[in-house]
Length: 349
Ligand code: SAM
Ligand code: SF4
Image 1 (cartoon, rainbow, N blue to C red):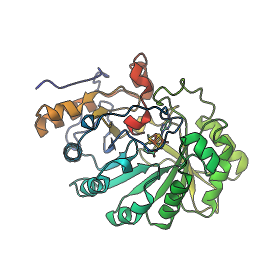
Image 2: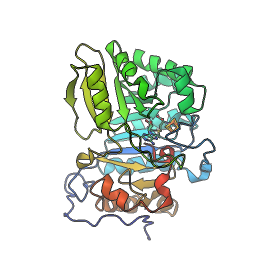
Image 3: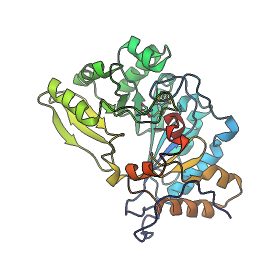
């Protein structure tokens, strides 16, 4: 069977360790975390993510439920233990709750997490809790309704805020994600942190990355992790660094006495690649072994060409054993292609 490899990636420089966990990359990093974009469609138009006239994939180009479950089962057999369901907006996909239940019940999968914009999510919160969803990341770039509209180009602040409150009232661990943009929400950073005074969640600030579907030029990164941290330290002189848990992208902090935590994700600066344990499957079924690569394996074509589970599994192992060292190296190999400006909605964040 001809394996549909998309982008030539790094050559393997270490012998792969296939004894305990077959998904160990060529730099010795075990791969245990899969991010799966279940759709590229979305009911918001966040300025940093996609243009107003975004063209979405036809449904036949998306993986079916059966294809996704099969990929998760194969991945679980290879050592994947954590799955994050993302998109596009996961809750615009028909049958998403059934799909989540099936992911949760997949042998080997220990944690299912969700990233959502919260527009449609509130009513599902009790069922997500019953299901045992491990955590929810809620994207909410500001708690100011007008600026929310400016940033997302949709009048959905009230429904997103209702989801925020429902999640806070639930037992599901909650992080709120905000992409920091100069003048658009940078003025809200401290007010957002203040919410952690009494509310038990992690407020995370993300550097803007260039995956905006061509909405605007590569961002000149005014708000990098150092500037975000400086703003926090200025407002909270007693800010304490908690650190970064294994494989996590967020550097965590807290203000003594506050109920919640604060995180900074240096997605543009890429300070965390050395411990990266994640792979991604995009909405159209492409494997990415780095956010900044261009897609290294066309899994959808492989599945639809009648490949056996063993062939799919071998192709995954091979792709992981030819991984780029880090996001900078991956970017060097992709910068001349138009896809570099793919929207984050097809990649899944
Ligand atoms: N629609 C869902 C949401 O917004 O949470 C899930 C998909 S969204 C693409 C996943 C994450 O990517 C969100 O937290 C969003 O803020 C982040 N994101 C999107 N575009 C980004 C960009 N250009 N730079 C940094 N983060 C981005
Ligand atoms: Fe939609 Fe999420 Fe992209 Fe915003 S960040 S446009 S909510 S996919």
